[in-house]
Image: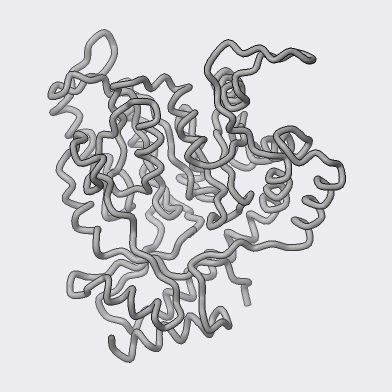
Length: 384
């Protein structure tokens, strides 16, 4: 690698004032210690407690939806979101191939079939124009539902994923779902704090999922949440994630197979403190983007990915797109060897052994981006 890449690596270490810079670290303060300590002192550390309710209410308010249901992780949130949206075994669920494996796994847990669609190079998410043309070609409507003419299976849902926090073209996807009677379930795992046309991601779909994993913009240690404007769906999601237990003062009665997915109170306490800092964290993420933009100018053939029109991104993971003259793995090896932790984008789902036989459209953009995207250190930094 040339001197410009060495200077870039050194600049990143100087920016963070570290000899080794992780990809993403959580940001904690005294408030987190205060809330978690309070939780421990009360003894309410498990699946019930005031912090769970508070976190759900604060999160719903922040996202701009009526309800939030806190759960153990983002995958569990998406699993239950799809279930309450009535995705059933053998249904097909549209999703980008360029996504984290949790998206496809959650569909598979229900016995449903991932159906992979292409992304837009402009948004890194679902290409809405290409999707509409594709659905017009391969689907037929019967009794108000959309079926894949090739497989005979019902296409029940579309799960767009907001890659690295960057919103997809949501209004166009809402229109497609309306026209084809498909349920929109947003995978907003990475996009807390991101907005499309002034409206928070996760508030466009019938129901959506968010993640609070340790590497997300805020964390509850593990954790996730289901968010929706549908009160009935929220009630059902909460019921399912608490083992489908019928409310009673002492009896253990259950009338459906449920899931032990409830977020513990101690994790929710951490989440309450983290959520209070969201405006500050997003501002710091955006400052980091500006700093990277100034650092990358001297390296030819490399672009720092920036938010699309009508979007305000949380810039969860800073993203470089290399031109085709680069060997991505050589760049990754160089940065990691020189103290700058960097990672490639996920292997596209259609290339993984367990999903190779799933239906898919042509994935031209996905194939073009695979091998060209890397993520660089993205921990928020304070403004000057």
